[in-house]
Image (cartoon, rainbow, N blue to C red; front, top):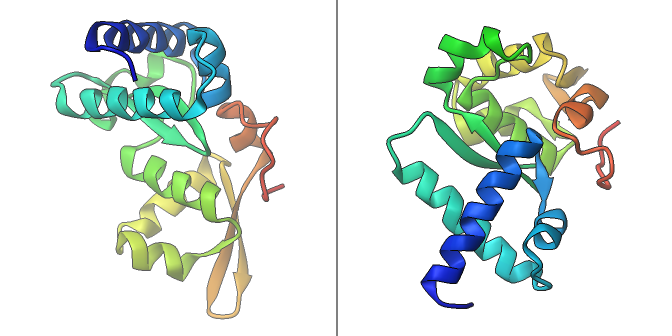
Length: 164
């Protein structure tokens, strides 16, 4: 990759793109904004930017969800100001569970609980209430998949998802 000042400028452009778009963006779309042909280089820039946001003491996080990157409020702040956005608030834990579901779907609830612990039940309930996932009885557990609302909310409709 190029020197730090160029990489820093790329990060600032990505930050501006995510903020302005207000939606999740995939690496191909971000590479066009940056004018970089290497998807691998863009992926490294995105990973570095997301890591910077994790390290900062700020209310904003950059997360990867369903193969796309999005700028979101951290759970602690979303709970306080979420009513201002007019969009559904999603707790940070629920976002992590939703990302896992979107990558692994259809996935069994017991596998999610094994990966994330007992708090998963509350996150699944939250995601069902917000209509981002559906659950269907499958023996002693439940089969979980994302919904079309999930695809629309995170602007993932153009991806090849296994879900509905």
